[in-house]
Image 1: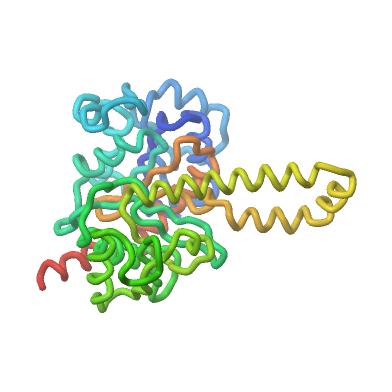
Image 2 (image 1 turned 120 degrees about the vertical axis):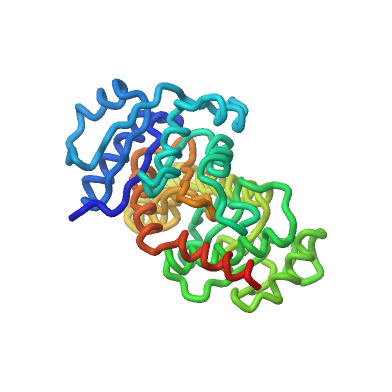
Length: 338
């Protein structure tokens, strides 16, 4: 099958780079022969790992980058000064049209800054949000924004709702996705100035399925498909989600091993528990796309292992196949014409 998706992968970014990043790339191309991955970073380091792995050689290419951007560097300054960093070189591949998507587990700040400075926003889009899929009782929901825009206005939340709806319909296949606004109560009059004004704007949008306010306790239940909020709130929700899931798993494991009777019970329900936990594993959904740019930018968490990287690469393919960027551009352009 001919290659139809080209992914520029920052091989040096993340806590487990470069091995887990490279391994994820190999797993992706071994699973799908229509994907080509450009591993960006230090060639000698990348080659050392690739030499011990089996993969179709024509589907992976190394692109040299001599510098790295670390988590503790000032993002904008690093993007401007480190022109030969793996993040900048990889993003330029997307900017120049040589790749369809950029993927990294590196510095979130640098990725967000680089996305806007190098690749640029779609004309008419006010702020590009970071939007991960999170597991719920009813499947998955899109959390938008989870880290890109802390200080925003109600009109930004409206755009988040619209492009989030496009993503959920195109990538997840949810028809007429339900849009919920994160608030401290379900009532229309609840919240601060931002949420009150956003509520009125969202209520009057005829092109989205706005279902009103959603409290954080209702998010895991899947009461909305698109969860709209500003980045401070979204990041708190995401980190609490991750921490609580990890804690619950540890507590359940400890309880099951606390006595002979519980150990016997654990053996009987082991398969059912594994299946349930797998459904709530956010890693299988890939990374968080930065929506509304002139090219796809995807951020995975810093501790990403190969499975997350692989799933994120496959996610990039689906994003391209569903023409998500073109649909967002079309939506934003129509609004600007009105």
